[in-house]
Length: 244
Image (cartoon, rainbow, N blue to C red; front, side, top):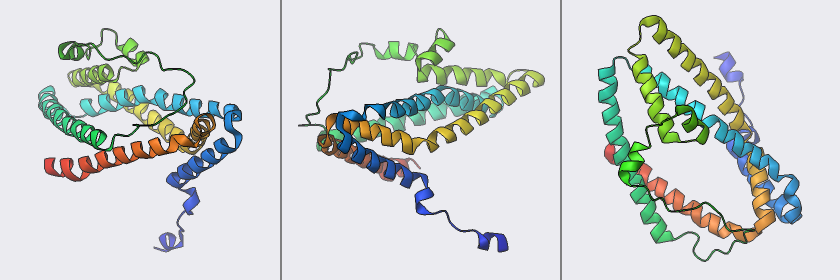
């Protein structure tokens, strides 16, 4: 009790969410002051985004292998997997519906005039059928799927590895589970490190946006934030409680 009573709460500026908000405000101020001369800060934002992308695939793969292999026999995994898949489809459909309704009601981005240096390339409407999309979930080359960031294919392969790990004799099963758990633990440490860099990354990204597009980028972004907030609120306060 004496130790707990002697502890003091961390100051507000030491908390991550406040640091991110400070970084956002500071980046907007620096971008407004420097304008296009903010180019020397922009690489910090690119580094932060690359670090985020770097941790996604190994974190998902290792966590799913550990979770699936730890469930026990394959029959139990199959039953639980079928229920989880149905729940995923239902909750995702509800979330998509909430997002589409919010977008059509609020219409973020309508009337926005952001000066882009060039038109974006490679943005095309997907021409795959539902059957082809489902078939492409099965990776022909798991390593290529990981390198390309094909998350659905990575998830499928991780579930398969975890499922058949449960059918190995004990020495092999224990070895794979320990290896996957060790990779997951390392990735969690790396993730914590990357998240702590978020204030710097947000500062650089905000400075670049304001420096290159000006303050006129804020009203569309605020409308977009409001749309996302409304959609998440509907999903969290209406959809998920109904499912529960």
